[in-house]
Every structure is written in C-alpha cells, then in structure tokens.
Length: 384
Length: 180
Image (spheres, rainbow over the protein chains, first blue to last red):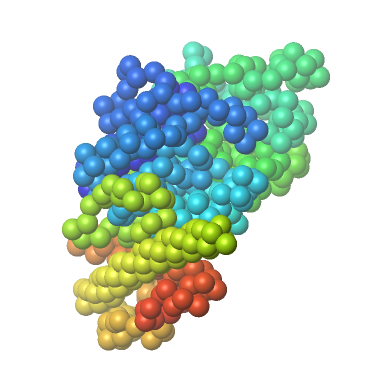
C-alpha cells in the first residue's frame, strides 16, 4: 500500500505529533508499506529518506502562542504536487483542525482520506466563526482516529461524529537492550521513581512517606529518583536515616532511562491522578522491570487490574510499602510480572499500533481508486 | 431603480453559487455514504465467511460448531439492507462471543499453525467490520446534517436519493480477540 502522511508542524522542532508520525512511518515501512511524509521544515538537511519538505513554516500568533505553520497558495500548490506525484492509495493527515498543511491536504485531496486527532482543546472562537469552512474540509475525511479518550471527546464536541481510538505506541525494542548502571543490580534491592519531583500529581511525596517503613524492612534498599525539579529542596526535607538511601539522578537522557529501568528491581509510579495513559509504565514493562503503580483508572487499565503489574491504593503510603514488600520478597511474583508485563507492553508496541492503523486504511480503501488532486476543492473548498 | 436591479441580480448570483456549492457538497457526502457502505458490506461478508470457516474447521466442539455455523449462515442470507441485516449480524457477534470469545478459548485456537491463521483472519475481520461500521455511521450522520438544512429541503437538492440509514448492531470485538 502507498501511504501519504501529512504533518502540520515543523519537522525540525521536537514535538509529540512529529514523534508519533516518525514512529508510525517506520512501523508501516517495517510491514512493507511505502510511506511518504509531507511536512513543513525549517532545516532541510539531514531528513529521513521518506520525508518531503513543504518549505519553511511561518511563525504566526495562533491560539494564544506563536505557532510555526504552513499555509497560503505556495503551500497549497506543494501539497497538490505531492499528491499528484505520490500516487497514494490513502492519505493520512494529522491534527486536521490546525491551520496548517493538514487542512490544506483535506481540501486538495480527492479519495480515501484518514485523519488523526492528537490534542484535546476547547473550540476557539475563530473555529466557531470558520466552522462552515472547516466542516466542508472535514467532511472529506472518511476515517477518523483519536489517540486518546480526551482527543476523541474534543472531536465529538467540536466536529461531531465518532473516531476509532488508537493510542500512541511504545518503541519496545529501544527498551529491551541496555546495561544497568555500574554497581547494579544490587543485592540490597533498588527501586525507581521517574518524573518531575516537585509536581504533586507525580506523587513522589506518597513514596517518600512510605520510605521509613520500607527502609525499616529492607535495610540496604536504594531509591533512585530520576527527573527534573528542585532537588536540593526535596533532599533537605528528607530525614537523615532516609536520605542516605536516596539517590537523585536529575533529568536523564533516553539512554539513561533504559539503564535506570535495568538497574531497578521495581519501578514505582505513585501518580495521584491526571494521567491519561501511562506510557512510562509500558516502557518499564518493555525493559522487563516489574511495575508497582497507584490504582488510578488509567494505570489499572494498562496493568490489566493487577495482571501485568502490581497496584496499590492511590495516595496510601502504607499500602505502597506493603505491596512493595510482597514484590521484593517473592521472586516468583516478580518473574510472573516480568513475563506478563512484557507481553502487555507488546500489545502497545508500534508494530501493533501500525497493524490497527492499517485496518483503518483498509476500511476506507476503494478498490482501484487512488488519491487525486482535487482542483476545485482547493480553490473553493466546498465544491464537489 | 437601476441599482435595485443590480442589487437583486447580485443577490441571486450569490444565492445560486451557494445552492450549487451545497449541491456539490451533498453529492460528495452521498458518494461517501455509498463507498462506506460498500466497504462495510464487504467486511461483514468476510466476517461471516471466516466465522463459517472456523465453525467448519473442527477446532470447536460439535455443539459450538453448529451454533456458530448457524449464526454465520443466517448473517450471510441477510446481506444488503442496512436495517434488516442488523439483527442477524448482532446474533453472529453474540454467537462468536459465546463459542470463541474468551482469552483461553482464543489461546487454544492459536495453538497450531492452521488455527493461528484462521484466528488471525477472524481477528482482522472482526476489527475491520467494527471500524467500517463506525465510519459508515459517521458518513450517514454528516450527510443527514446537510440534508436537514431548510434550503436543501425546499430546493430538493437531494433529488430522489433515499434518506440514509445507520446500521445499529452489536459488533463488539470479543474479549479474547482484543489486542490481537
């Protein structure tokens, strides 16, 4: 299958949507599909072979901040040429409600069109004013995907209609191989926390409150804390008998994140709420490190209610300590979670995500029909 | 007087352009409904065909095989109409859930290569049918929204095209096939 993907944001700048598209493009190519990505691009050197630049984005104030977007007749002509030359079976646009390449592509394309909604946002006044124009572009989309329940809600409320939920993937391979830090794993056991240390919703305080009883039970335990924030402030608040069991790593690289997982016996996610998914949990499971997480809805779902990872009652330090003791004293339980967790992480691997996305493509494909440039659609938007 | 005539002519032209564009838009939406239904039809036929194949494969016990085969054949007989087919297709979903719905049952099916191939085909068919139905209903909703507009009704822009019907059926993918 020949797939054309449109990215609305600058390829040179890091970002969630760009990352998603890149990973999806690689996963689709692994499955034997041909992929071309059209994107605005500040720096055109060093592009992946499947990326086509649509020119430099223009910085404009939009939606309360400065966004780097592509629009105007030159961009539209580029989209048209890309569609004409591409001979695509399906065109997949991302974030079609942003005023950039994606919505242009909706206007320009005639044929099987799929769109993915990423962000959740309020409907802005500008969107309400231009609702009619947007609506006529959106009507051409025959298959819709949302990456989260929130994004789906946004779509239902702003545009109407429904979408298939396909969450972001995890690059499992990246977490499988890696060496622990020097001196790890330690016989006295190691536990790991990841995330901003001064963000209450990440729940570090719940873990630190449990530390006295954990240290009491496991005399040589070490807690690794990896994440940005006010390290000195948190360290100063620790009791001295706890402080020498805690090591702060600060903000770490992706490579060091893998090493941190490999160094730990258990990864602890004490988040108290506000999480929509729990990608870090899956990364830990892909690395083969058992997870102990608070039982908030998003985590319980990812951990299959205890099957793929252990849970403790949210914001309950005593329960955290008790569940951790079960894990650290039972090699069997840890091994079971390692196997089940690894299996579960595979269900969210990009390979699985690409398989689900291809099913969406197959649902909108029309035999013998290619995506064509629709000139009247480009000029008038809504002419059929 | 001259200006009034010119004004009226301009208004009429704008109005005409608007009607023409809405007619074009509606035409596109009807086309989308048709292609979405063709796709849904194909996916549902594939689903019942593979369900029948699973029933005949000897991987299930005789009673379960009979239940599944019966539901699959009834689903095939009612191909075509979006409203009439909903019940037999829902029954097929229920029969699948009852005979080969749980994780354990699916795991048993996937044990040997032949069963794995059937299972993969069935899983793909189940997911695709569910996706196609969602997209079809979406197209119907978008089309109905335009057809409800006063101007579209007064000027009969939809012509004699029948009012599009959604397909309301149970197409929930059985638990055992989730994530496969």
